[in-house]
Length: 377
Image (cartoon, rainbow, N blue to C red):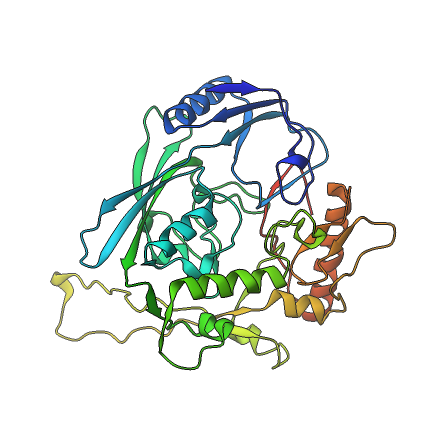
């Protein structure tokens, strides 16, 4: 366990904003992380944990509290109770894309479409990361976490995390606090053991890969194709490319009722949100008459493209406000980039401008995807 000289967050985050916190600690093992957190909680100070810094938008003022950097690494293979599958228990500080590469090299399928997502494994379940139709909730078994002020860690099944579209009970939503204030120590995934190939069934991934049939394709090819696609969009970190100085997608794709989606132009890309096909209706035995009530038809939700909404509200790729060093990526309308020395205030100004344009044009208020620290939109 180590208390270190505070480092400016602009050097530790991919959006490159943020001052130095009052205090900073580092933890390279689970035991160190538990000890560091418990020491911080004992002081009553404000705190947050920092992994890869790829999903964080930090304000210009110094954070008045302690930042705990999670540097733990390691992948452990454990038996799966399901035939033809394997479980990987991964430390929270392990690089996510390194985990994907590890799985693909061994023919373990289930996360290959999430290649190139920056950040750490411990951060992945917090916002249920996903890409091209694949989400971590599809393979997540459980997480080991430490609740704030708890003496010992607990193992929590994925079903108790309320995983949804880019959300969970652990996420700091804009303007609110998480339902469960805790820190993930390790993550366990259950993956299919293959011969190195898989059949791609998800429509969104098939479209992204240009596949027209159910032919099996190599996992390595899926990974390389996704990496190439992400690079073209400026979504792979590259110190020589200012389009990658971002927090990835700054705004979430909007989830709206089907009735609202119908008011949008028909050319706006949209995808149905998968319904719960395994919903169970429980009828008390004492009240059972022999008749099963019809299932209620819940209104369907639809995911609509935030990038399309932004571009069709008049905000083009490469757009920036006068005299601002923040701008929209020249490759992807969803990414707000630091073109060199931009302050958090400049990024915030641009984000608010985009929100207002989309709201004025389409009546939808886009929500930020990164965690906001000492900054408001």
